[in-house]
Image 1: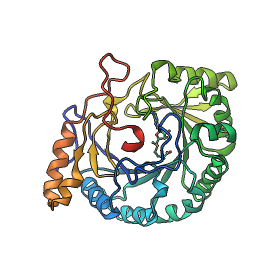
Image 2: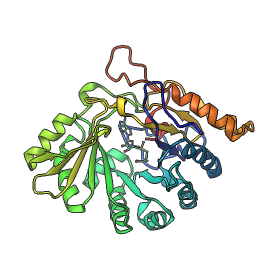
Image 3: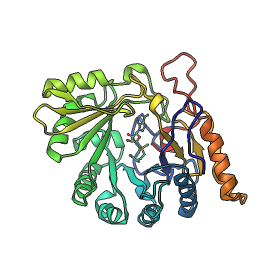
Image 4: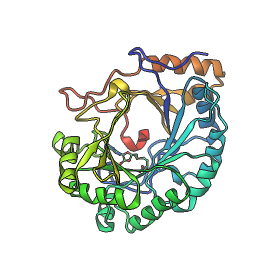
Length: 330
Ligand code: SAM
């Protein structure tokens, strides 16, 4: 059986599946504010077939995302089915979820019981008023906080928080998030804002960079960088007293494309080899036309070989991705 690697020698073992294009939040840096989904969603058995083939090709980690994945009825059963797959080494694939957390409190334990290993909750502020301004949904903060706590209670470990900072909007949340990491015993991950939003508001000046986040956080409490594997895309820090972990993912100021091991399936079954791809590959259409597993395998291997070398954020002539983050699956 072939395994997945590209023409730049990277081996591919992380898969993200967007299971819906719908979202119940309208975060200012992500969406235009409309409610509509732009792309279809597939029956779970179609994603499952794709995942089965991909796990047979060396995928070891699967992350469910969206849109907002918890809007999808049947996600618990889907996780249970994914957990029955076996990697090429005979192990259960790691199964993770990225969610805005709004609906997490009720479903965290059933997801854990079904085989979910980890959850990442996106939060861009830790006070309820600011949170509502960013998400454009009233009263979300209490639900998300309850979701974070329920996830920890259910043993989804570690619970990670994703935060995107925008200059002039929420960069003053750096220290509050540091306190939050310590008090709630979660790992807070700051992700640099990338030009993947519907409204095309990105400029280099809006990005709050890794260096700035470290500087601001260190004014609160000293940070120590933790050792990390060469292949890790994130910089990890702990506070000098050992309580609380901060991670910074810096695709803009410190790109890590050389270590990228990811591919994505969109909610409508397109294979994407880079967040910044200007085209995608219609795996679902092949399935719909009755392709065998062997045909699908050959298609996937061929597409992945041509994975883009790197993104070109901030360079002259940068061509925006053919889809924005919410429609790819972050
Ligand atoms: N609804 C889920 C959620 O809120 O986590 C999953 C989808 S959301 C698009 C996935 C992640 O992408 C979130 O953490 C969000 O903050 C992040 N994101 C969205 N647009 C982004 C951008 N332009 N740059 C960096 N991260 C972005």
